[in-house]
Length: 98
Image (cartoon, rainbow, N blue to C red; front, side, top):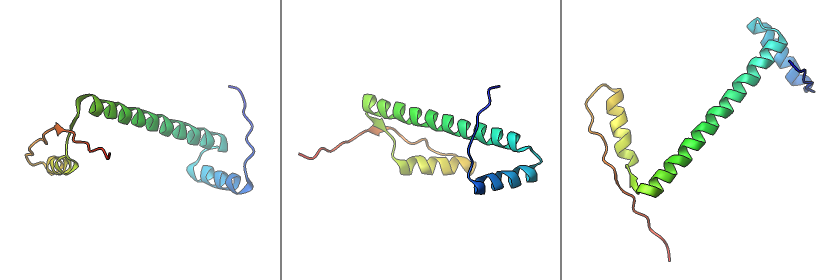
């Protein structure tokens, strides 16, 4: 595994030392875990953004949307374990200022 040198501010270095000791990990293991968690977070964020952009293209392609209030009502009923009427898709109405 290639080595990487990081110049850490004293305050951050102190925090890492304290947190690593409290968690029973070496500083090295603590920093590897932190970097892996941040990388995973950024990957999930990238996937979320890609999904949102794909959904935006679907709306543009098909022009079908659901009212947020109806979706929220449906979700709350489902979480509560009750029966819920699935919200209906409707045509997207856009207004363009001239």
